Length: 457
Image 1 (cartoon, rainbow, N blue to C red):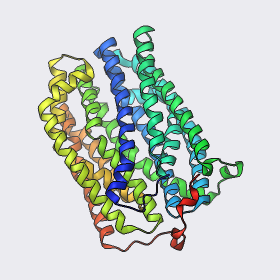
Image 2 (tube, rainbow, N blue to C red):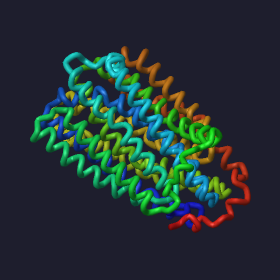
Image 3 (cartoon, rainbow, N blue to C red):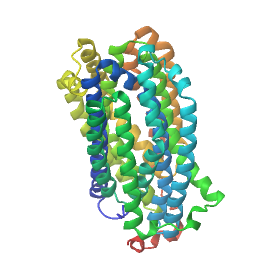
Image 4 (cartoon, rainbow, N blue to C red):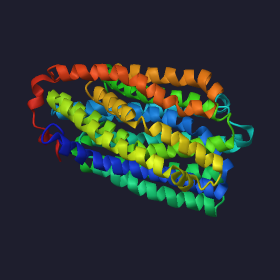
């Protein structure tokens, strides 16, 4: 466990962030490996089938990821305040409510899958492969939630190394399974999806076992899962705010994907490649977002608001330097990166994906600010402003998909995110400025003086 309320904020944040970054990098690595394996072995059409449905899994899995991250903020605040009972009960409640919610979503998604595929305008020639791929991923949502739930609980108390180790092992295992299923057993896109589900299931079970074995505070009793209505309300208030923040983003992406799927296979492949590369380019943004949520949560619990302001400034500085480097890389090597991801030599794929990267990268400093501000506000207990910002993103992307994309074609998709980034950062900046002008008050009062060392094994 790591106390983020003491010591040099920059050093503490980097120590927390580096394992998270490595974990996300490995997760992205096996996602890219899947893309490369499918594209090289099965061809552009199979890759387009995968890309045509990515927004569905991203939406629902992202919702669950945000939900468990929001749940974990209450664990972080309890840990920052030194409340062992709160750490235990909020963690048990996170796993309980996460399980109920994920099972409900799985049933809803499987039942409504034909509807979702029609809404996305999946081309007829891609339909069967797309359905087979996404159905398996959706069936694995519970295990994905379990890993994210356990990993977020561990991160909330400062342990970022264990989730990294399990994710690294899972990433390598996924690649081995994908090669086996797709290359040797000829299972097609279903093999790639099955490899992902199995690998994620292994990492989830190992993470849960470690959490219970390593930390006595997480050795739950039956009564720990008998949460009160007040505790359930607190958990869902925090969790749904984070989940909505993330899913509203993906609803907007879903509306764009619906238009993209009408532009043909080459454009679908190009967009799939560009988004995979963008995930890498923007990796530090999400990492610093996770860091800021936990950092702010613990420091709010301890009443250390001055550290929150300093942490936000440091996070911005780190991500802005990275943004500058990614702009240079986009303009220097985009076609090479696209080829490495897809294996495609199509001039339209290479040029279209490269244009996407060059235009979007110029606005990365705005995008990084959004991620840091939204997660910092969530950690501080503001569950409304981040959702308002996400609503602006949703409205902007839907409007662009309806009115701009039909006129400008794929160029309308390319400019969509830069436009909405500029709009959605405005309410976040206004609220963040208020934090810098106010004295912090811990919602836990004097209890924040309790030593957090009491929670160590």
